[in-house]
Amino acid sequence: MAHAASFGELEHVRKVFEPEALGRGAREPLVALDDASFAFAEGELVTLLGPSGCGKTTLLRIIAGLISSSGGTVHIRGRPVTGPQPDFGFVFQTPNLMPWRTVLDNVLFPMEILRRRDAAARKRALELLTMVGLEGFGGARPHQLSGGMQQRAALCRALVHQPSLLLMDEPFGALDELTRMEMNDLLLDIRARTRATVVFVTHSIAEAVYLSDQVLVFSKRPATIVERIGVDLGYPRSAAMRYTDRFTQLERQASRALGVLHGNAAQTAAA
Amino acid sequence: MGDTLKRIVYPPLGIAVTIALWHWYCVEFKVPTAVLPTPGQVLQAAIARYDLLLSEAWVTLKETLYGFALAFALGVPIAVAVATSRTLNLTFYPILIALQSVPKVALAPILLVWLGTGFESKLAIAWLVAFFPIVVDTAAGLAATPRELVELARSLRASRLQIFTKVQFPAALPFVMAGSKVAVTLAVIGAVIGEFVGSSEGLGNLLLTATSQVNAPLAFAALFALAGLGLLVYGAVVLIEWLLHPWLPPAAREH
Image (cartoon, rainbow over all chains, first blue to last red; front, side, top):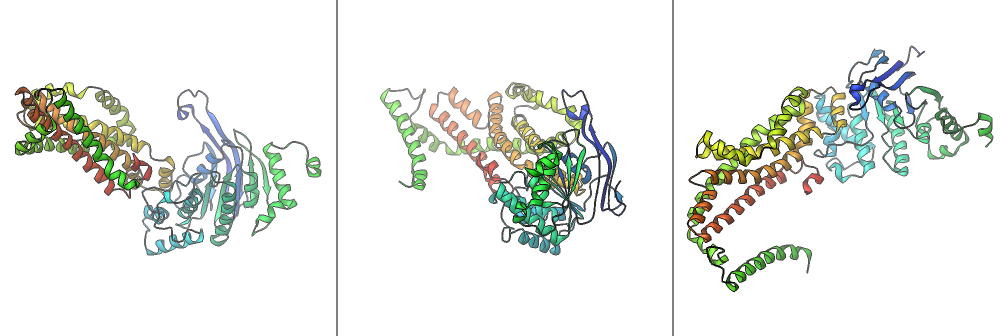
């Protein structure tokens, strides 16, 4: 049962896609998500870790209010989520910048939709671009930027309207390993500065452990939460932590929960 | 030779070689003028009758541009309607696709009966052939809008109008331009077909008259004028595309 003082609370969230919604050939309803319950506090970074296609992205979209659940409830700050929430920020797997806009105009897109595009918004957008290391790229077009730089701009776009909750759907999955590690540090840095609450979807065990306060491990479809791992590493984190015993232990725990590592705790700890 | 120099020198060189070959063929094999005039004879006819060519070209140009403008003005809203409303899509898109497969040229005699031999029938045929590429390409462009961009806008509770003007339409614009390039070229063909079927003016009519009078140099001059007209309207659309280029992603601009 979720704690009463939680920032976000999910209770028995289910998602079943009806055959009609799945398109031709589908006869059986698809249970994408079977009974997910968890809670997180304000300022926490929670990771949903699971195999590809296990329904964790579906869960993230339900939290965002982009799709409805088939059962259960989602509460953020004590209020039920029933539709899109303008004070959430969303980062997709791919940057999805608009090629016809400059980087700065892309970052300001949410402010435009919310009709709050003014001098203050512009100032904040420029500050965010500086924070992610894109100072001076505001006037550039997205195609002039590398994949990692585009994703940094997408991160600025998700943060420009000062969202209370940042939802990230495997945002660094398409990047190379080095860029990904860099982006992990950048995310932690931004989160420390903005005190944003983050729900992060990934299928990388190392990324989940490195970033999170709390890792929720999902099973294959129909997805259920098989384990909750509290990460007690403390912040700020640095690359050196990746090689500590505690980090390895946590990774091992997550691997076992995912079913990719077999055997009991004593054996694997001794190994 | 530098690449820039090659770009400047080679294309005119190609044209010059082609014209020279053409001239040589006519002279060497003593081809009758009525069958194939020499380039010189065509040029002479063009210079002698340039006022006639210009006035006839003006007629054809007007038919083309009005037809294209009407196709654009009707095609884009219809594409928007079928791309954004599922009801309209299911009701009308099959009809549109079925109509597209009708050879539009075959409709020319019927349109002539309905609208007479004047400007209206040419406009209608030019409109008809230009209409479908604009509708189909615009609808395809709207449908190809990245789902995530629409979701991003939706997550901020954007109105349908905001989603359309700020996301879907700009995303579809490269497709609209691609359709327009095809459509404007087809509009020239449509106008000429209309003139062939029944007309007393325009380059198509001039071509027919000159051929029936065995005036091959003038017929060829009319043919070149038509080619020039086609290039002119196509170039105009490319220019508009270029002026809009901040909107267009580089990949779409390349082809």
